Amino acid sequence: MSRGTVKFFNDTKGFGFIVEEDSNKEHFVHISGLIDEVREGDEVEFELTEGRKGLNAVNVKVI
Image 1 (cartoon, one colour):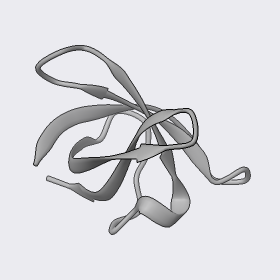
Image 2 (image 1 turned 135 degrees about the horizontal axis):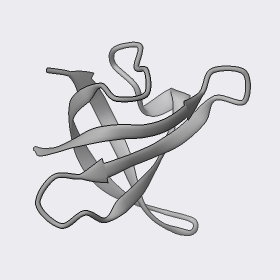
Image 3 (image 1 turned 45 degrees about the horizontal axis):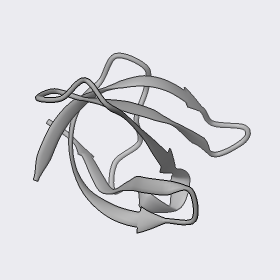
């Protein structure tokens, strides 16, 4: 599991971005990949999976 911080999340549109702790890379997250409800600034754990436009964060949970 990777760790990071929610940079942006739009509840209305159902997506956002997480900045990975180790690499500072931004990863797309869709509402379908969430385990917990997230807000901007939340510390999270997540897995990465290949999406249509690169890596996506999935199984995202607040820590």
